[in-house]
Amino acid sequence: MENLKIKRALLSVTDKSNLVEFAKSLTGYGVEIISTGGTKRKLEGAGISVTSVSEITKFPEILNGRVKTLHPNIHAGILADKDNPEHLETLRELNIKPFDLICVNLYNFAGAVEKGLKEKELIEQIDIGGPTLLRAAAKNYHSIAVVPDPSFYNNIIEELKTNNCCITLKLRKEMAIKTFYLTYNYDKMIYNTLSKE
Image (cartoon, rainbow, N blue to C red; front, side, top):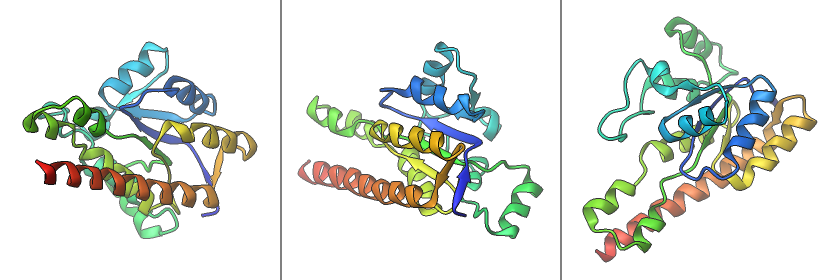
């Protein structure tokens, strides 16, 4: 798929810099926003209509937020190949809507290390759902756009403006590559930190 129309987005971020402006740009194009916890509260506080991830999964966030997005209703919507009729039929049969954009950034593990948190507290800052969402979307860049950091918001907004609310395959691939580099460095940082322990 060369040009991907953005109709449905999942936003779940730790770094909320420019989040409201980004979400308003998306909703200005009629994009449906799905979100989690703190991100949802931030957006709703700015008057943006948001659907809770729990409404999509039909399951509450549990284990102090450790489990919220790890669910087939989320990941099937991310990993479905939109050029594959069988994938689309499976989504229809299971009543799962596909996503078009995933905007996630990760728990601030580096900040937790700098604070000198003890190991038990430190491991709570190891993001699981975030890297899973990012890697799933990056793998499926032919069918979905991934946005791993606020520094990329302007690129996405500009693309939507100039391309009739679509994101090109070229930009989606660029973002996927950046995402894999980001998750690689995140895991490397965790490895280096825990190895020193």
